[in-house]
Image (cartoon, rainbow, N blue to C red; front, side, top):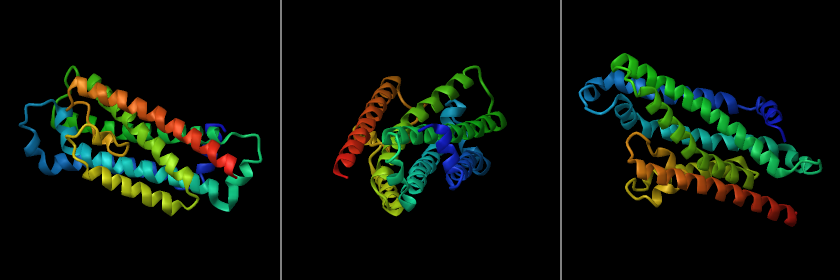
Length: 240
């Protein structure tokens, strides 16, 4: 199943507008925060990105995760509606290929969202602070790190959405997972590895060793969740 075909299918849903408008809303957060409370941040000794991400990332990450929850629900609702998934199984198409195409499409939309948010950070730094020599490298590292840590959440959301034919079941479970993640203690490394909690981590405010631990953990989660989806597809196919 090609990504281009998935794109043609989602044009009939609110998938793309949801990510575009949601990303824009998240990108406005640091701008509003600085416009209203700039005096709280301008005198701090940290780098501009550290200040901005520390002040706004928790809200931005929350909006990003909610988008990642809603997006897969829309994608698989389209497949389960009118038994479309059952009809596709009669074609020479692997269900795992469908899942992979949806993962690539959702990941690409996450890149667009993160890029929009990065542009917002650039604007805030250029307007209220000063762009230093290491700014661009620091920006790239931070948002690359955030993208990697978002992928386990994307995969798990797709796994949940592919499990239930009823979109509201998938959405409800996803929302519960999101709010569970917000209640987990941030200083507990093991609990912070929950796929819906790990995107809240910030590269610029994390020690290098700990950041690498999160990177390794995210890669392991990506492989584990991807394997779990593959096994689930095989088991469900054998029981039908």
